[in-house]
Image (tube, rainbow, N blue to C red):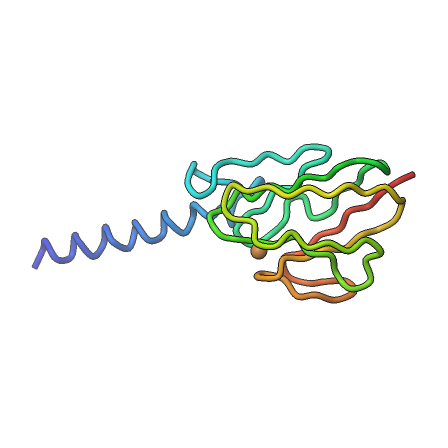
Length: 135
Ligand SMILES: [Cu+2]
C-alpha cells in the first residue's frame, strides 16, 4: 500500500514537471528548464515561440529587416499573417526547434497569429503578435 502511494505521487510530479518544460510559465519561453525544443532568447529581430505565445508579442524593427521566429517550445506552431495584414505569408508547420524568417520592407503594422493556438482576425487573438515596421 505504501509503495503504491509513492508511485502515484512520483507519477504526478513527473507530469507536472513535463508540462512545465513547455515554457508556458517562463517569460522568455523556450525550454524553461531545458526541455522541449531548446532555449530561445529574443533579439532585436527574433521572436521566440513558447508553448502558447510569441515572445515578444510586439516587435518593432526598421524597414528592410528580416525577422526570424524560433520555436523554443515542444509543440508545433505556425506564423501566419492575419486578415488585414498588407504582407501575406504563412510559415506552415514549424516543429520544435524550427525557425521561419520574413523580411518587412515597407513601414506599417503587421499582425500575425498561430493557426493552432490563435484565432485569425483584425486584430488576431490568442497566440498572436504584431510586427511594427518603421521607415
Ligand atoms: Cu502555436
